[in-house]
Length: 264
Image (tube, rainbow, N blue to C red; front, side, top):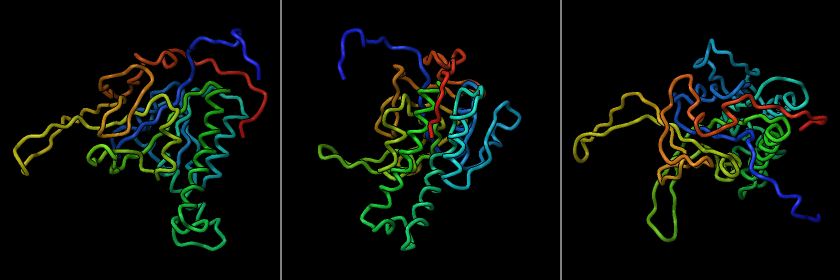
């Protein structure tokens, strides 16, 4: 391919990719519902937290093929939705694991034994996550939809050659699959309770006011990042998108692109 200076472009306002991570009950689904005109693809039923709101959702997916077909519906049919929320990629991972095990003719007892073992089962799962991410990318690029992935949190140990080991919060997925929801996304936001400790030694107690905060800049204690210049914690208020001040495309209706072909 030949290039010239005429191929140069300037940065432009566009639809975004977000990953919201946190423990159960912290308001990840409620936060995702504040994105512009959202539609939910559900692998678990967390809609009770936003009952009564003007939010639409597909039926709860029982298989990975259900997820793929619901994404395909958004690709091939006309609609006014501006945001796709996948709630959650953690439960989606469970569906993928079941699919990989059941598709193995040797009928393995676990994912560690699937596809011949030696990590092949985890690689097969990561490939399925890649396929889903690819289709979400298509909706983002061709239909101008924001994409929000919801993930539950887990703890991992980081071993680095030049410093002591330490623990941090991450997505509750196998390490082969995490990259699809962390790499090349605009923001990985970790939701947590504002917590205070008191006391000495082993008698410290943790208390909280119930206030939720979001960290989306790099810190050692959990996976988080952003491309919007956010360097301080954000307060999660009910019914308010915490990123409105920083993301121009969340403030105005996203103009969807006209397309003539399918994503899947």
